[in-house]
Length: 157
Image (cartoon, rainbow, N blue to C red):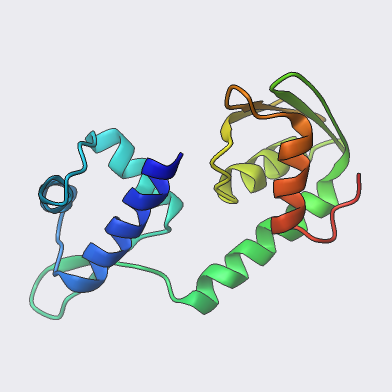
């Protein structure tokens, strides 16, 4: 968990510091910083950080981070989608079940994924009205609820 947060901070710093045109270049910088990471993991990190490519005005493109305003607006959108779609949250062991209104399971699962909670291994959206959330070993449903409330203060049990 801590490794991921540290790596994400390093990725942000590298993108802000250097002119990075490709994942291969970024992987090289990360390796120099002591991170052993696969291209697939880096790709997921870039998606999570909402990294995009912008023109560098020299016939090329470089990685760019969204501004704080953009990130906050995006997070508000996902929080709104979650609050609009969920009905209840319950759990057993490290599996959380989120009941949703009909047709909202994809949006709720995407919101949970996008919030970037380190305790979440992944989500599975049911066809219509259920989301399964798998938590890391040792993390309880109550821990999940508490972390969700940190991200979404409006969340009710």
